[in-house]
Image: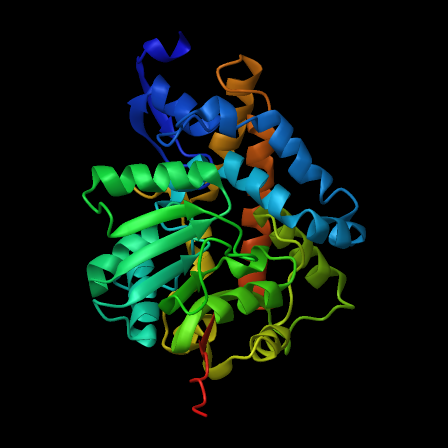
Length: 376
């Protein structure tokens, strides 16, 4: 019955914390995770239980790495069950970062980042394409519109599948873009040599072992097919495992984003090769964008306070953090909402420090090819 009243108040986005005029219903929807994709929501979400499970995976810091790896699929699924609405309302339908041109809006930078990957893949209208770890399908829709190719997306989280396909239907994408539930370390729903092109945008970092993902990509990719991936990695030339500050950054990025264990760029590239790929090119877009004088990816988490840009400000973050506590305290949001928001604050703090120190990049673009089958 709480949702039947709609007095004018504010609209809160708990991840990036936008505050605009809206309704009490909008506040509760965003803060509680009762979002637009809530199809059979009672069966897909238990915020208090899920947030506690995610916390348990990190309560002993690096001592829990093997535990996180052995439970990766479960706790990543739990994380996105509680975080997806926060991401969509505060960040948009594309759950990733991008460097930004000086005269470019945040939204424009996100789309350009996706188009750049599509160009590197050379996606054609008749290609069969897979989006690996697709979230709610923002990138696949943008890339479909850019290339004309039909795209299938895979995510481990059924809630994201529900929400993504709901958007596809409402926005007229029909069967051009389709989300399916699945574990990208298995890809059991797809036969060998199915796809012409495959891409992953900041998703393979959730795997307990990236070779498991790359092995599956290699299997379902056609001979001669191309795989492009924006990878979350530690920068081998800057990250120091003996530096306590660096280790704290690593921990915060992992905990705030449900990652089992971050690896270095060198390890990542070696994993591609171990899975049989020919690595065509490697580019850290964080580095190249800085060299061009563009605004670094993490700056969107550091925007100055303004009414128009509240969703990307520290002020907005602090306001929303205490508002989620209030909503939960007065039982306008489910138990566990405040804990979920605290996890996302850890993510923000860790990512900002990672961007400032440049010991980490979320956009190591690796382009790899599955070798052509040799004729007998």
